[in-house]
Image (cartoon, rainbow, N blue to C red; front, side, top):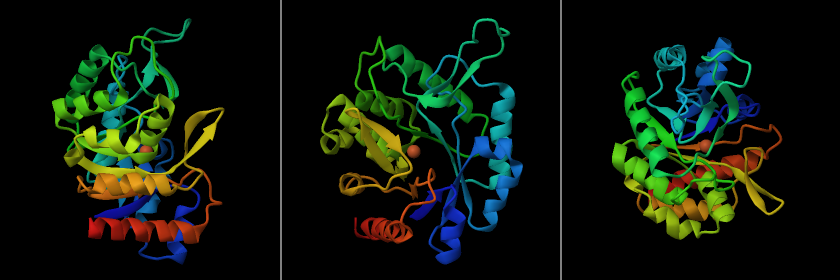
Length: 271
Ligand SMILES: [Fe+2]
């Protein structure tokens, strides 16, 4: 079992002070594409590639050039798999733009939870997988509200997606708790309805509650409830990797991060 962190301003200084703390650094494809020099972090630790460009749960496909660029980064980074989101990021062209210019939303959006979207997402992931030499694994979205036309819960949507496709799960515990808080279901009970034997990687990060809504927060530390959920998941899952996504702020307490990493390692050893 490997432990890593998402690349952010605090990761390389942390590795300077705690050599060997991390088995890998999670790096976004979009950063590598925009700034190829970011590949240099592989001098500090191996890279696992994360991606937010495929729009798996959307109806506007990524450009062929984007899929080719992701495949090229697979080869350059030596990543064992590609993490992508069960979400959409591309939408139809804005009025006035060329018909082939899709709109990039710049944020992965939880889709309408319906049979039509589910079937399309399953077809997309199967088609995209053919382009890559390593497996795609797919991450659950945080749900902030119910999109019109939704007919199922996010738990049923995610479970069905993985059961139908056999694709590995990137289980983001903060996203799951955010969905549970916003949709008012019991996280520790509902998470056991997912096909946890398909979990390949787990994401750990903070969450923030504002105006009675829970939000994703990579500038905050995971709390005790997230570790309780990790404990519940480890009773069924054997993840190959746990990534701490503390990449929005360099201000987090390093000693707490190191303690959390040690705790996750020992939880996996004792599970
Ligand atoms: Fe995540």
